[in-house]
Structure formats: structure tokens, C-alpha cells
Length: 354
Length: 183
Image 1 (cartoon, rainbow over the protein chains, first blue to last red):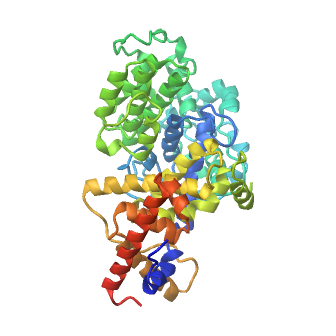
Image 2: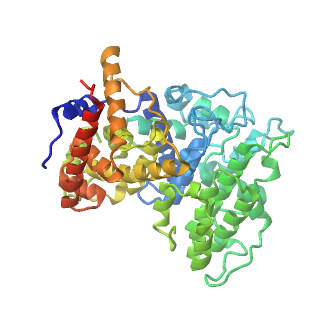
Image 3: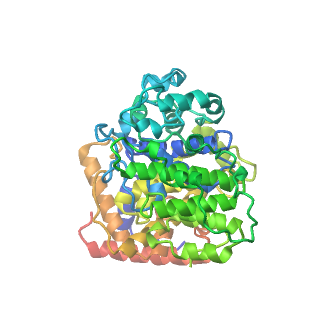
């Protein structure tokens, strides 16, 4: 290569070469997000430490969940879901529990007794308002500050889903690095996460099941829904079943006793709906996935997971061979939502950004 | 798998690698951060961009077949992510001033300050290059990639890379000279 750098320029480049780099806290935070992504993706159906067979839908959806379980110590929306969302330590968190002080990434990274002994944390919940994201499919329900008399809802959910949890619990990745460590923490029951989990769902899959239980349906087998047998060529009207609507908006029982709908409620409801829709997509029940995605988007037009839901809608429409509609939906996607991840995912669909 | 093992695997081109994301992250997170920074990702987005890079890498890792080194492969992802961030930043109409606060690597405050100054200046000068030139320049001068490797990362041919590198060096030299007072 000709035209080398001048001595002065070379000296400058050399001086700057090893400068910069993420701090340990930043590394830990990023590792936690990525690790939670991988562990949640595992819970969504892939097996093994690396989510080799996991779709980007799951990954990004899981990335959202990673944020929800509280990277940085509070409920936030990860950058993974859009370019303008607040992140831990950067901007106002959408916390529904202001009494829980945000923790630094290093605090999040700090091993905790419960994290070390995750098995113990899987025991019965001492109160209805404390539930780990790992073991409590009814975490959303558990955020009600005042539990009604009788068995706590979270406890009831736990009673009915112990075997499922055993099967579907996210498995942390192997290894001993920060990613694996953070994965174990996110999959285990860190006290900090336990506290926050009152407002944070466990995993999309678990929440989907919890939602299905609360609605009497079974989101794990969405193809059994009455509308599950739509022909791919037909364009079914957007009739929403009560189950779909609840999945989109969150059941009334999932709202805080105050009745005030917070940003976290919205996101939690979106995550639940997203998980249900993703399961429907996985089982090739595109019609059901489409219904849930559309209903949820309408219910939460400014929701944090709007790009995800749009993509899901596009994927469902592609699955139904409704390419033109899919393209229309994509064209209407705001520029701000067209992130690198979105574009990456679109490569596998029937449409592309114009 | 240890970093060493990952490195060894990395060097075993052509063979189906057994990859471990932990090792990949360990070995390349700092480099990726620096590449993104030098490619013009604003300071406030570096964490996000790095995260995005590794999330994409995480998804694509199982499909990595050793056609290139892991480093080159990861740089390819980083270049695309950086491009995306730059484009969005430009669309929003503005670049933020360079901000301090980077890791000083445990050196003395004096050395760290000098190093930081050098980095700030380099980043400022790099802003004077166009995107294509900057990408080639950063990958060659800072990351030590060869022209064929850069061609692979940027999905262009080697001649194009050489031309861009020559132009980038000339321009960078000129920018350094124009600054004058650089020691």
C-alpha cells in the first residue's frame, strides 16, 4: 500500500490506538443484556447454550425481556427494541416501582446469595408480591400491591405450573465469563430482580402460559384456537377473541390495584402478547399471530415493543402469503423504528424496506 | 471454552469451528467498542451499538463457518452497525461533541489524559474523512487488517480498498498538518 502515513500522523494514530474501550461496568451491563437475551431465548424453545436455532424474533423479544427484568436495577426498555427507548443509566426509566432504587450495573453484576443458590429461590414464595422472574409465570399478576384474601395469585400460578417451569426454565449459558455469569443471574433469582419482578414478567413463554391460564385458553398450543385453521390465502377479518384481547392489553387482574396504567403495564402487556404471538408464529398459526400483533399494536400505539409487533405482523402476513399487505405494514413503519436489527430480521421475510 | 481455545479455533480456518459466545465476547468486546467509536458512532450510542453488534453476532454465530477470522467477521457486523448508527444520527441532524470518560487502562492520569487527547484529536480528524475512507482507514491503521480482509469486511474488492486507503492516508496526513501544533 503506497502513500504511507506521515511520521506525525503515525505517532498520533499510535498514541490513540489503545485508547477507549468500555468500562468494566459497561461491559457487565452489555453482557447482562446479551446473556438475558440468550437465556430467555432458550426458554422460548431453543436448547443448548447458544441459541443456534432461535429466530431473531425470539432474540429481540428476549432482549426486550432482558430489559424488563431490570438491567441497571429498574424496569427499562432496552435499546434492542428501538433506537429511542430509555435505557438503564441513560434517561428516565419506565419504572412502575419508584420505591426500588435503580442499581448500578456493577451492583447488578454482584453475585447474590440467592443467585448462588438458585434452587432455594424456587421454593414457595413467602409473599404474593415477591416472585422471581424465573419461577413465577404469574409475575405480572403478582405486582398487585394488595393481594385479595385466599391463596396469592402468584402462588396459585406456581402450583399449577411447577412442572412446566421445570421444563421451560431458561438455562444459562455455560462458561464462566461475564456473559455466562450474567446469564445465570438473570436466570436465577437475584434479590434485586426478585423485588423488581413484581413488575417484570418472567419470560415471554411463561407469561404467555400464565395469560392463557388466566383466560382459560392455552397459548402454548395456539393452533387449537377456533381461528387457528385459516387458509393462508384468505384474509380473515380482524376478529379478536377475548383471549387475544387480553393477551394484547393484559388482563384486568394484571393491573395494579390503583387502576393506573403505567408504562410498565403497557410493556408487560406487550411482552405477554408478543410471546403469545411468537408462539403462534412458531406453530405456524399465522392468523392467530397476526391477530395478536395487530390487536396489541392498536392497544398500545406508542408501546415500546411497537417495532417488534410490526415485524411480527409482517412475518405473520408473509406466512399467510399476504405479501402486499405485509409490504404496506412495513412501509408504514416509522423511520425511527428501522434499526439495524429490524433490517436484519427483514432479510428473512417476504418484504423489504423501500 | 477459553479465549485461547476460541483463538485457536479462530485460526483453524476451514474447519467447522466450535464457538463459544462467552469467549467471543471476552476477546472482542473492547475491540468492537473501539472500532465502533472510530467509525463514528457517537459516544452516547457506543454501548447500544456494541450491544447490537453482539446480539447480531450471537444470532449469526452458529452460521459462522470459518470462512474468515472471527475478528474479520465481527468487524463486518460492526461496520454495518456503525453505518446504521451514523445514518440515523445524520438524519436526526447533529453530532455530539466528543466526550471524555473512557477507560484509561489503569495508566497514570497524565498518560491517560495524553492518550485521551490523542484519541479526541484522532476522532476529530477522522470526521474529516468520508465514510468509506474512514472505514478502510480505521480497519487498516487501527485494527491491523490487511487489504483483502478489509475488502471482505466491506464487501468490496481489494483495489477499491487500496484506493480508498491511499486517499484516506493522504487526507489524514493533510488534516494532521493542518492542525499544526500536534507534537
